[in-house]
Length: 356
Image (cartoon, rainbow, N blue to C red; front, side):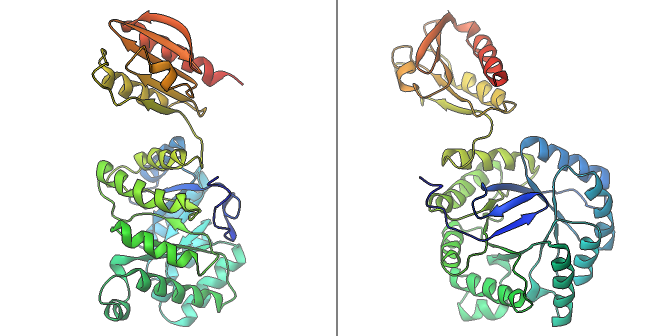
């Protein structure tokens, strides 16, 4: 149902990856290595790719970072997006070195001829540009006009940048409207979604640590996706970017928009639970990180109601009083000692993951 109500956006291509139109919602991230350190950057890109990342953005802070993009591009398993601020020469150098996308705000590049040079080079290579508006860095005149960061101010900023590109006959555009305040971010995206057809990149900026950032991102990104708004997402978490990918897919899986890897269903436990369920569930969740198939696995604490409550799961366990049941699609297939529950469950998960 969510797929049918998705906002019909225009489509752009970042390398081989399609964004917008009828394409699936794309998961992306950003390296936090020094881009000039080619070895470290490629290592992190590899980790992100293994986790399921589909696009990666790199900070281009100077000409040294822009120069490093050439080797990184030649060895990267993922399409590259160059993150550019203020210096149009870095955008040109990044394009010369083969990047698949740019993230910049044309209004911050300077004189009109500089913007024109970047747009000309991007158009020649069919490289899209993401206009990235952040609530924390709105233009001074908009902050004054709206008495601080506001959704309308963010949209006005985005529309101004969009017009600069449209006036140069450039339409390979994506847009983001990020804020650390979730209601502000949601309002801004809702407004812009009704005014333009360009694909939208969703994110809650400066969301926080893994715990707080996951919650903010799930609420902000999830609310918009549930309304059919959003074509690509980045979950912003402090620290190692690799966990961002799992959180992004969990958000998408919870809405039925993407199915990648395993999904755990576990009961919250109650007075009937006679098994130490929490560590079992955590071990199952960890094991599912390496599963390719979209398996739903149930971990239930009651042998009476467990199989029925998790009937929609592909495979699962329910334990109590030293023994446990292994069930598949609600049907009991084995009864084993509690100490062997995980071993038997993992055997079935491995078998199902290999099935054609």
